[in-house]
Length: 482
Image (cartoon, rainbow, N blue to C red; front, side):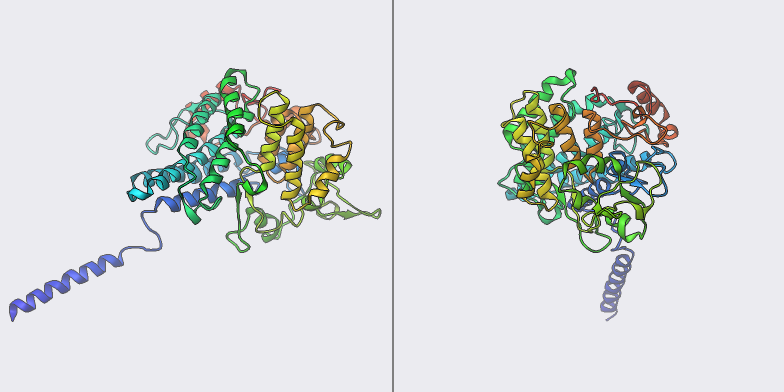
């Protein structure tokens, strides 16, 4: 009997010990996260950083002069130090995007898949790599030389800064390797992929479009002309986006906290910080651009409703100027990584330079305009009418071929400030307005390095600053040679 009681007591002790141990596990804050979840989180963080117009993290809709500020105009006047804007963006891309992709890759690599799912694993890893390339290019195009080969190593707190041109060379190699591993006949992340729902065929199209974007970004850099030509013509041959159905849209939801970040700043915050910018209105009003009604509201000053922009970088009373349009205030407005219109304008530019990309500069120019109008909710008839105007038509519009393309590419990039600002930096068109008391030379052409890098990684940061010609907003990147 004593033996039985002892056994029962031992069993109870073991059981209780196990139960008490279970109680110490915080199920709401797990110590480990699966790779797929990290991938989804990185996609979300990437889309949020791109879509946001919060002046603490993303000022490019201002610098592209799509919007201007009403009261607090520091960012429009290129003060990025007060809110440590370069630090916030830098940290988001490295910590919340690239590091999550790195950990997702590590965990998925270590996960055992069924023999029938090896292609799924390969696709997952290749898609992560494609988005790594996208994110690295974004960082280079913002800052220039950045930590790359020694980055994302928690044991190395002072990574060196790699030359921007060398990073681009590496990205060409990486995107080719990733494309080669993508298998459209197999699955990937399924619904955990918040961009394409796991559709690998669309990821292949995206990857080729990204390869085209890489090439076009450095098309005038003679030192890597071989890589550039191979990327541009190779991507066009392999298959880039051919309709808005291919757009890389991050779909937001109607309820917080899953709305487009822009909705938070324009609506949920209850603030009135932004109005239309005179630069955009002055360029598009004479062209009767049908997209204006999606971009902005109208103001009636007694002579009918018009689109009126505030003077860039000046205090602009909210009630006196056009406001961001209803489309921008929609919580479900997609966050766009690359779209069909952007691709078509790259192809138009490549064709105008004699690259073999299929079609003519004019045909791609027209297709880009139509794609942009349709993506905002316009019709093909509106697009046809707009393109037929002598001020827009390829044969009669004012300017050189590149200026025609640049104006329409910049317009199509509306609400994607980094793309619009980069289009202007690459092609020096359309004309932007410097703040009052400034000149065109004062308009930034890069973002300065994070302020805290001056103390946390001073030697590497100082070497990088010297290498690019100074850590200044006015220092041109290696591809900005117009």
